[in-house]
Amino acid sequence: MARVDEFCIDRYEAHLAERTPSGREVEHSPYERPRRGGTYVARSLARVVPQAYVNRIEASDACQNAGKRLCSLVEWHRACAGPNRQTYPYGPEERSGWCNTGRPHVLAKLFGSDPRRWSYEDHFNSPRLNREGGQLALTGEHTRCTNDWGVYDMVGNLHEWVSDRVDWTLPKKITLRADIQAKIDDNMGKGIFMGGFYSTTDQHGPGCLFLTPGHGPRYHDYSTGFRCCADSSDPISPAD
Image (cartoon, rainbow, N blue to C red; front, side, top):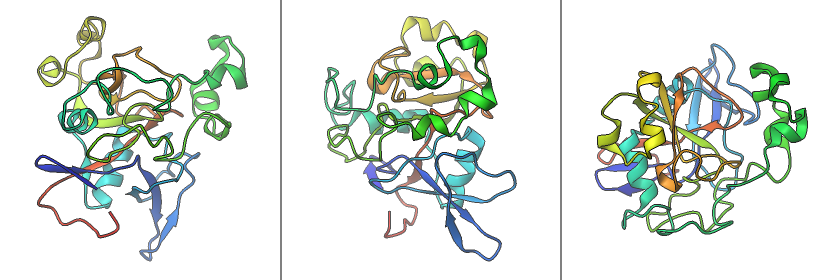
């Protein structure tokens, strides 16, 4: 983990291991949904496929099972913006190709360009989406998508769930673009994910300010991932 002010944050987007009844941990496919009733543990390593298809409740449970917790919005943004509090991890302006963003929309490529024909389970959660080459990157593969704290992929690659819900305290926590702030009333109580994913640019805000407020905490699709945080006083495994 990387230490940021009074908390620590995983350097990489999470992948999952399933904990068996005997206590053994078995690697979970990052292209598949967590199994209902399973016990999952969040892990953070370089050069692995990060876990998508995960909802906020599952992400939070996996962090807790790892002795950590889901990051708050303020923590997540602070870690993304870096010591100099910049719009992008690496600086004030976007640099093309430095983070995994702006990829062609793989849903249209695989399932046709008419969204009316897409279904939530069969298409938005299809394992085929993130298996498609040139889309989802390995953790840390974009070596310039980082800052002086050494956290990677906080812009692009996968959306990342945070622990906050949508309410009127949001504008006090982060700078919101006017169109995103206007969505607060309609999305009150919903979950939040940050940073964008590999097919976005600045649709919901630039870089570290990218915030999606429109989905409930049980929502999941091929773009939704997470990473964990911990208080700086908490014991952390040497593997972290």
